[in-house]
Length: 279
Image (cartoon, rainbow, N blue to C red; front, side):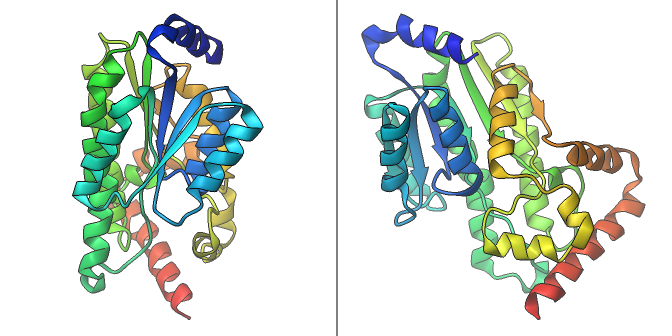
């Protein structure tokens, strides 16, 4: 499929090179997505928070893989920042791949969660992804082939106490993408959603995973594996991506076990996570 993308590039050389735009690209899964695309000789537009190492990452990818790479540093929880990003992205770049990776997680008791925490999660996981997709869709549709990959979570397949807003926000991502997939079937744009499980992307996440013991580590995958698998299946036009055998098993369990049974069991695990991380 990378060969086909390059053929599309050659066909459109008269109007400039094509790019993939990746949000949350400075670390973790976003950085792995950027690296995987660079390995396939795909030019990049990287988006992340200021001061998060984005200029250095962009420079190293350009040097190592001989691609074009530019970056935009911004806070996507701010609505005005999204408008600024879209203006920049459409000002001189041709985009045929969009990867909405930026998001935030964590576990909180809903009643004691800070208002700012709730607002930021909704703004980043839902509003930013929705508006970026909506505003870039005309550009994506202008190409013979284009792809959208939205990052949801295995947590989207069941409500979860103590991850109430997170799991609900990832359901939104899942349903939005599946609806888009249907709407765009008669166009050149393919929409796909990936549901990763646990990934030790930083110290805080690794600490939370450790709280779940053997069960938490069974489904543990590296960001590099998830990115590689996701990009491979995206370019094969697979609309629903669940990387890893254990995550497939979790998906099956959450789809088949009645909610009255699974909800308290899963929620107790995350209540324990909250207790253990406070110690």
